[in-house]
Length: 117
Length: 319
Image (cartoon, rainbow over all chains, first blue to last red; front, side, top):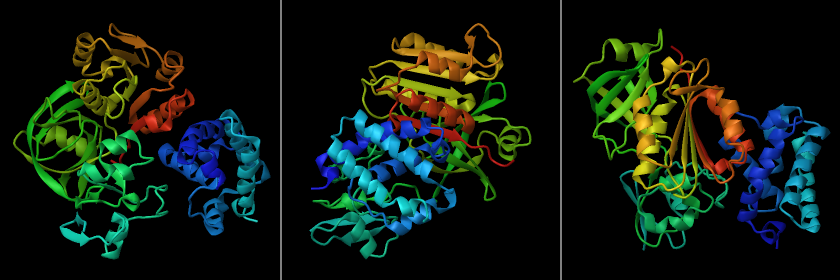
């Protein structure tokens, strides 16, 4: 059973996405990347990201991740900020620490692709 | 055996085949992505409600209201008619039946045309093949048998100049649409906040009327912003709606000075203070891009769920 299923599947993503997106928009280190004209589409992207990070059904490949982020000049600080927002979101939703650890390890698995290394 | 009707063709579905797979197999070009009901690339629409509800998981109330469904998740038990969620490039011919001034530099244009729409949606109006503009509907099919648009005169604007100077009652005009998801939907007990800048009031007026026609129960706050008190229009109608409906509260906010009916206040500051906690609200925001962007973000940060914020951006065209 994936952590996605353990924490409640799509309902968990729906509960998390607004909280998560509010946090990244309020974080000066990364808000510029998320504050776009099409807020609805950006929100949908965050939903897709959380589904992936929770180990849910997705079609992300390392290549997609690399392509999508390669012109953004991201560094460790940006990645860390997103990870912090993610952990804060999960804490706010009282997700158990063992599941949070599992989710962070999924997020870390795409780090090199995101940072184009 | 089940089948799909789509674009004048009929496709027999294999056992356990989704609508999306059936359409792709028979050569139709349908956008698609995850095939897992997540990415929403394959959204389609069907007015045969029975079979699509299982394929609406994760869609917003508004998408459901518009009979959208995820074609990758839909395995119908009976035959089903489906269409693209975005309209084809098909125009209908309308006739101008009314044209009158309703505000400083704003004309109400009324057009009779065979077009089904939901209040708050928009259409494209064509002067000819080389000149078209997009306008929101201000009318409601329950009250109006013609379509109504609020056309603001833009100095040097080709389309609005043509409407003002040349177009007259009895003339024909091409229309494509309707488009857009800025419509009344969802829970009747959910408080509503509607914010309009300038002729953003056109769709807001339509959505407000629709909410009332459909028996909305919770409070409806309407915030109307304009540069000066001269720039407001539909004032009497809005105040009348407020008087007739206890739950409706209308606020006119003049950005530069106060007048009898309008308060002098910055619309962003006013909303931040008055609606500091927007959790559980549904929010509609219509007007120029900078206004919508800023207020949408502010409302989201004040606790409104993104699913519950519906915005209609009036993009400035080249002239």
